[in-house]
Image (tube, rainbow, N blue to C red; front, side):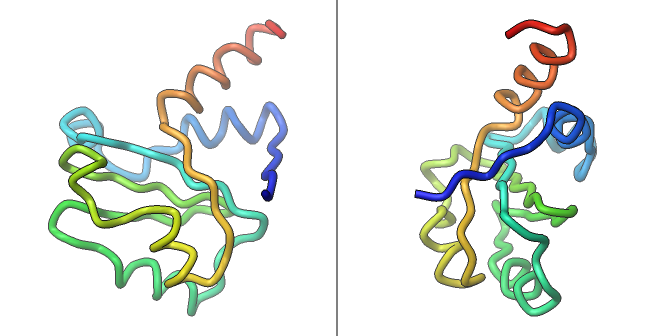
Length: 111
């Protein structure tokens, strides 16, 4: 199992990054952040973007991939396995709300 570590300032920046409009995020069935060890190269980014569907959209920013699903996550054919087979790198996805809660918790100094 791979672990993808981020500093507190990095988690805050990830939580604050706005890859999609607020309206799209609010109406989404799922909004997740994928953590990578290294930024995707051009070929890997192209492979990821080829996975877009009418319900799945992606945004690459640094060592993170943002996934917006307009329906329930269970209705999507996208998953970690699909990502890793297409892109050929390991990823771990977490809900954007979880990332935002972590950023808020550690910004306030809580442990």
